[in-house]
Image (cartoon, rainbow, N blue to C red; front, top):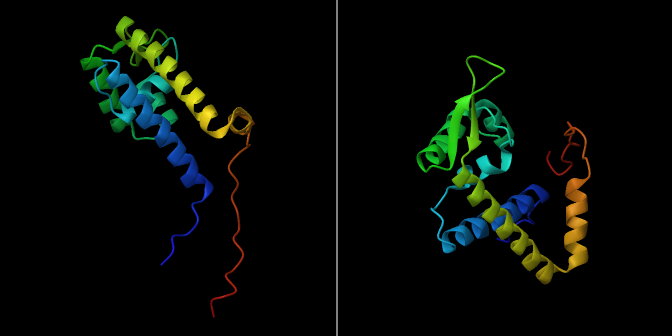
Length: 153
């Protein structure tokens, strides 16, 4: 049986995985402590001034418990810290430590090199077009009605 063609969401997930795998391996090669993909995404979604675990979970598209687990692994590794939120007596903000900022800057440099590798493989115009398409606002997700399958009785 032949495999069906991969749809766009599958292709986007594969592309994200290409970057995730390359980044994590590159960081380990540079001597950094191993992180999970979820922990790397905490860095990607964190505000400069700090972010609550609930907001991180929303941005990452995971449960609060999953975000909490990733954050506490980063706190234990000395890459993040938890501080009081000045706007709420009950909330706590997660923010990077000095060591976390250093690791994040290294990760950003790795990603820039990976983007250069991708441009070398696909061509600079293709990567520029991809970036432009992903930076263009798509609007709200559509709710569609699928036409009936005329093949079924």
